[in-house]
Length: 95
Image 1: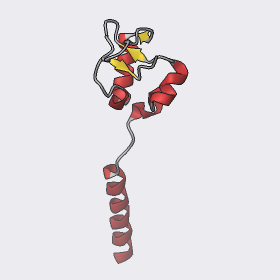
Image 2: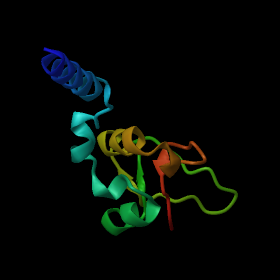
Image 3: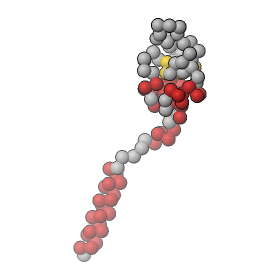
Image 4: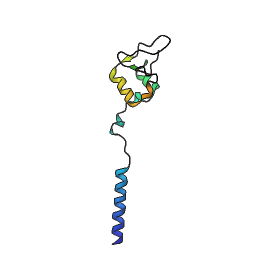
């Protein structure tokens, strides 16, 4: 009788650990590779990605030839906010 109780307790313990264990988000697998860092983004978009009406913050000549897409910029910011460090709505701008 004790053996059955021990097995039932062990099974309950395993079940509770399985329910509590953290799981990865379902959409983590769909993370675009180009959002990893600026080097990866530049392979796909050489001059960066920005919102349609974004303006580059610079004291020199501003970058104007970045990919203009609100949707791509939102995707980049969803996965990696560090891509737009100066917060000018252009991720990884490069001349």
